[in-house]
Structures are given as C-alpha cells and as structure tokens.
Length: 73
Image 1: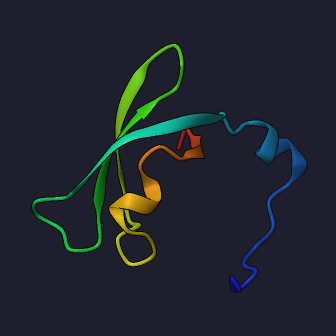
Image 2 (image 1 turned 90 degrees about the vertical axis):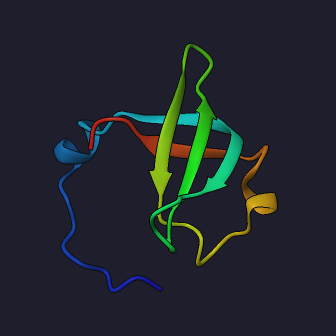
C-alpha cells in the first residue's frame, strides 16, 4: 500500500493527460538496473518510454499488455 501522501484537487487531476497504450516491446535499460525501455503504441503514434518497473515485472509480463500513461508530466 502506498503511503497516502498529499491528495491533489479534482482540478489538478483534470489537468492530467492520461492515455491507454499497448506495450509493444520491452528492453532492459543499458545504464540502469531498475529501468525498462518500453515501445508503446497509442493508436495515433508510438512513443519510447523509460519506466522503473524491473523490480516489479518481467519483460514477458509487460509485452502485449495495455497500461495507462501520463503524457504531460
């Protein structure tokens, strides 16, 4: 469980640009033990994203899955 932290307002939440994407490819980051490099298809475009997920998921668990990504952080 997360620590709870500070809650954001509804207005701040509405500012987030959240999109669903399908993870096409996953590679281990060459310079970081905790990171993966993801190739993600969002329908209208593909993006490369670096994510700190190696501690929690294997490559096989991520490839082909859909996930929610924040575009404007």
